[in-house]
Each structure stands twice: as C-alpha cells, then as structure tokens.
Image (cartoon, rainbow, N blue to C red; front, side, top):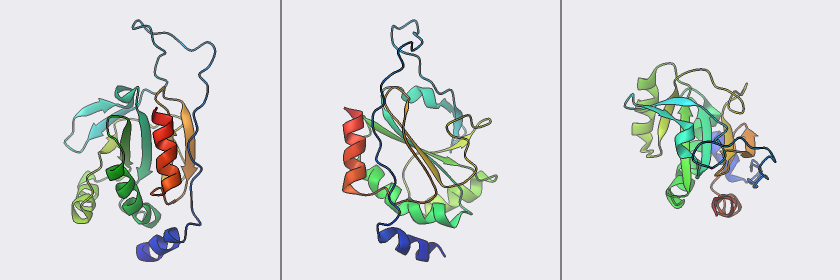
Length: 172
C-alpha cells in the first residue's frame, strides 16, 4: 500500500500549498528581550527522552509534520520529506517530525530501518492548535515568528523546487 501511495505522490497531484509569510499582528505581545513572544508552547520529547519545546526554534522556519509508523500515507510521504530535509539549511529551517506512535520503539525501529536522519519528537502533552489535527499526516509550516505560513492535512510531496524555494524565501 505504501509503495502505491508513494507512486501516486510521484505523479505530482498531491502538492501542498507553498508557505507564505504572514504579517505580524499589530499588537503582538512583547517579551522582556524586546521581541515578540513566540505563539507556540509545545512541549516535546526527543527520541532520547530529553524535554524540548517548539518555542526553542524561534527565529527559524519550522516544518512540523505529525505522523505515525502505522499510517501508510505518512510512510509514503516520508522519503520526500527526508529528501527536502537534506537540502535545507538547518540554521534557517528546522524540521520537527512528531510521531504519534503510542510505542516509541516502533517509530524508532521504522526510522532506523529507512535510514531517516531528520529530528523526531513525541508529544509531551496535548497538542494545541494549530497542531491538533483530526487526520495524519498533517503538516504545519511556521514562519520565523511562529505564525502559520501553511498547513496541509493528508499526504503530499514536499520535495519540489517550488516548496523548497518557498521555505527559503520565508527564512530570509
């Protein structure tokens, strides 16, 4: 099933909308450092069990993908996501692959088997908007200020020149 879905993705019919920068709200909250507060407090756990927060990535474009090892469309889109991940400048664009597997060992085994090297996390609490989707895979692209630049529910082919260029433009 995954191979069939991967083949369908290769047709180019499932392209996500490219991310675009959104203007900051006029009355954005200000933090002590003088910049706008990051809008997302999303506690996560690394594969090693270390606690991190999505807000740690303020200043970068963030590609957030919710997936599970038991989800054929998730597995089908991963080669494209991994290819895109390897092409992006990690100083400007961060990938946050959030596994919704109840058993982290299953996710880790799949990642190792496929040779994926992008960062994978597990939710350390409930997923707040805009990450709480009723379907997976689900992808949210955040601008450097944390504002949602794009969202796509369902599988898609992200490794396209247009999508890469849009991420790079958003990261400027």
